[in-house]
Image 1 (tube, one colour):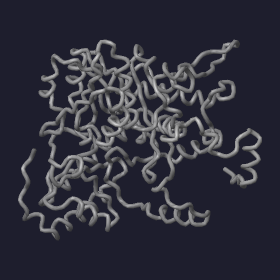
Image 2 (tube, one colour):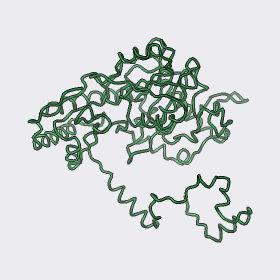
Image 3 (cartoon, rainbow, N blue to C red):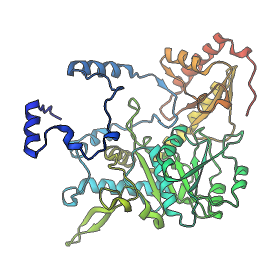
Image 4 (cartoon, rainbow, N blue to C red):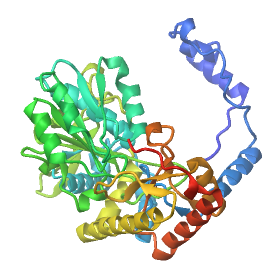
Length: 464
């Protein structure tokens, strides 16, 4: 975008043209007590040269080290064609396709994306799309409250083994809407404690959130959980990893009736790790609930000549309809990320996605066995998982991760802050990109660090 300067004289001329004395007059409808007088935490503005230096310094902080972190952001192989096509001008500069006659390419791509996501989740409809996985879960909770007319309590069962960041975002977005979030504990195997559901047998529960896999990488008994939700007139909200769905039972086939809503983070579908972003969220649901889905839905039709055409079929956001009738106030979608994901899924196909998932699962098992063979390292949860697992160390997790980082290895995600009861625990991930040599390198460095710290002589903490 070109730099377009406005001098003080230019600004005054524009204000004079619209009859305003100063910029503050443009916001005179905002009560004085609600206005920000200053922005104390915003740093002093920088020159173009200083900004360039700052960004170059931060860019240099990104390295090509071995990454075994996971925790909601996953490093997968992305075919070169994905972003070569995605960054073409036709896609890169495309905006919301309000004018169907001028946006057929964008609309068709979004329609194909919806079709793929609906197929992947075995549900009837998909939107296009949401900001990220965390806000997608929050939107799914809000949707469940709107859609479940049998429930009046606005009570959501949110398991503690759902991503901690997701739970925080859900709380932030729904806390002022009279929605109650009740936490479900997890067992020694890291899965939702089904026995804990008994206390809610007679309660009015609006929805149950079911992660698959959960934050620890462990697979849940989704059939039992889904059937419990439906038996108690609650909706089943699936929070899923799209790559895992290539080999796991899709949400639409959970239990006798299938999950009602599925949501998650789409980053594994062709989006690179790039300093914490970008991401995009996805959401699918049963047809009966489609009018409560946030965002937009693209439809396929035919024109007067019988040729296929695409258009915005359902637009339930506040920019399109009355605010009081809108399902959400999300103001845009992650269109470019959805474009990349669509191209990624098209190139990979069902077989490619399945191979990616199977190889990721296999590598995680290999790495788990290698690391847990080190004295002072143990696997916390023995249940079946996908491509992540939790380890407990007999030494400081933070110190160990710093030592690994010194060797250009990102060794995992510390769980001490979010799950202190697990002790010195960290979440480790492996995907299809990790070779045997890379996993051996990780193992050798961790072995050396553990030996140096004398961790093998430390007492093993009790399991939860």
